[in-house]
Image: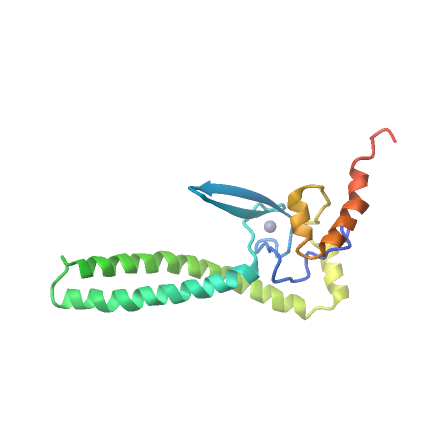
Length: 185
Ligand SMILES: [Zn+2]
């Protein structure tokens, strides 16, 4: 690897953020957004700015959402059909069935998107796992994007996905100094 031999961004790690566009664990910029009392963080690939995801985090959410969507339709469809059959479309039951179907459709779309990206991850993950460490190293060296060291908190969080805090400290000690060498030396 050109920049960081300590971390191979082409070696699959379920607990590390992954870019489905670049097919790699690229370095990222973390952005926070607030809505009410909640703050959400999104991870943007430094190479293509695409939103990255953590497969280990997404997997249980995806499954939970599919169960929730299934339950929504399981309740909404029979109630809605009964109301239609008896011609009672003004009742609260029919409104509830429509609201549940709406929830199901909305969360179903999110679950489907998660499924789509998880499928891409699974395909890449199983292909990478079949490769030898030497081949993965070669692939990382030839990848169009190379992770570069910087002293930011975002870089530290990225590195800590693969290394222990002590190893990340060593990384800062090794590369951090180089950034501060005055230009006239
Ligand atoms: Zn990317």
